Image (tube, rainbow, N blue to C red; front, side, top):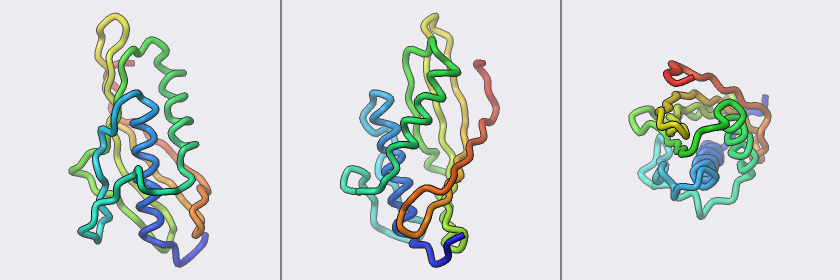
Length: 137
């Protein structure tokens, strides 16, 4: 694992990923500006250039494959759960909540945890998802 990972770059990657997911779901960014854990500066995703867009595509496809009749969909990060950036492991960890409505009007809510590991120059090494408390599948 690469050591000396940039906290700023990792947090930027999360911010871009978050904004891209919101864009793919057809909503304006539901996530709002993300804040670095040790910073007073908000990170506005539209101003960042990090290769994280593929993750949003994969996530959106996963939702569509599992829930083909989901007619409305939005996702956001839980503001009460901090982004955890581990510089030594070059990883980021955060929680998201997906919410939607099926064609028949049945609601869908699902909580996800995401762990991503990045190289020092901003390339994604691996990511893992965990879904918690499904209540609509």
